[in-house]
Length: 441
Image 1 (cartoon, rainbow, N blue to C red):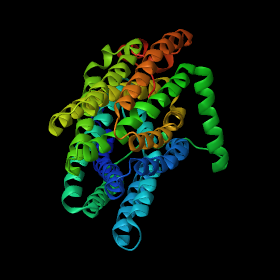
Image 2 (image 1 turned 45 degrees about the vertical axis):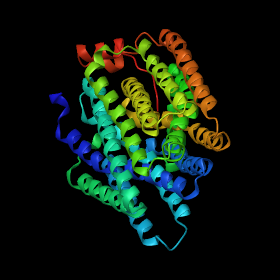
Image 3 (image 1 turned 90 degrees about the vertical axis):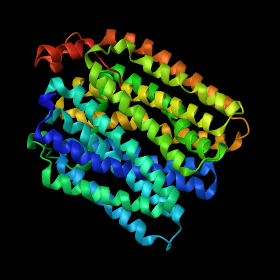
C-alpha cells in the first residue's frame, strides 16, 4: 500500500472527498424533492431519465477530454461549474418553478459527472504503479462509497428538517472546496495528456471510433459484457433507483430522513464491497465474477416479501436496508473488478476514451428502465410483488448468461493479451493472468 500513498494520488483522493460528497447530496435530494411535491413515481422516473440523457451523450466526449486535456484543469472547472449551479439555484429560489429548476440542476450535475468520472479513472494509471491499479481503483471506489454514505444521510436530515435550500447550499460549499483543493494541491504528470493536431470534432469522432474498434476486434468479450450490463441497468438498477424512494416514503409512509438512511445503507454496501476487493484482489477470479450478479438478483426477493406481506413498517424497512446493502456490495465488487480489468487491458492512450465509451453504452438503457419502472410503480401500486419478482428473475438470468459469455470470451483472448499489462513485476503478471475481470459501468 505504501507505493499508492504518493502525493499525486493522495491529493486526488482528498479532492474527491469534497466533490463526491456534494454530488451524493444533490443526487439524493433533488429527485426525492420532485417525488415529495408531485407524489408521482412516473414523474420522478421521467426527471431522472432526462438527467441521464446528457450523461450518456457526453460520457464518450468526457473520455476524449480525459486523454486530450489537462486532467487537473477539467476537474477544477467542473467543480467550479457545479458550485455556480448551486448558487444560481439558491438565487432563483421562489423566482421560477422549483421542479423545473431541479430538473435543470440535475441535468447539469449529470453532464458534469459524465466528464468528471472518466477523468478520475483515466488519471489513476498515471499516478500509481501498475501493480497498484486494482487497489487504487478500490480506494477510489471506497471514497465514493463513503461520500455516498455520509452525503444522503446528511442530505436526508437537512431536507427532512429544513427543506431543499440547505441541501443545495451544503453541496455548493463542497464543490467550491473541491475546486480550491484541486487548484492548490493536485498535480498530475503532463505526459498523461495525449496531443492531437486535428480539430476537436474530428478528434472526438476518431477517438470514439478507435475505442470501439479496440473493443470490437481486440477485446470482444468486453463489448459483449457491456450489453449484459445494460440489461442489468434497465432492470435491477432502475428498480432500485425508482423503487427505494417510493417504498420508503409512500408505501411504508416513513419520513424523508429514512430514505437518507436507505441511501446510506447502499453506500455502506458499496464501501464494504470496495474494501473486500482491496483485501482479496489477488484471489478474485474472472470465472467467478458473475456470482456477484446472481447474489444481487437474489437480494431482491426479500423486497418482494415486504411488498406482499403485511408487516410493521420498521420491520419492512429493516429488511429493505439489508437487501439494498447486499445488492450494492455485490454490484460494487463487480464494478471495481471490471474497471480494473479495462485499465489493465487497455493501452494508456485509450484508457479514458474506452472507459467513457463503456460507461455510455452500458448506461444508455438506464433512462429507459427508469421510465418503465416509474410507470409500473404508479400503475401497479396495489400489487408490486410481480414487479420485484420479475426484476429478480431477469437479473438472475443475465448473471447466468454472463458465466457463459466469460467462458467463451476468455478462450478467444489472444495468447499475449496479458503480456502488455503485466510485465512490470511478477505480482502484476499474476494479477492480470489469474484475475481477469469483466466490465461493468
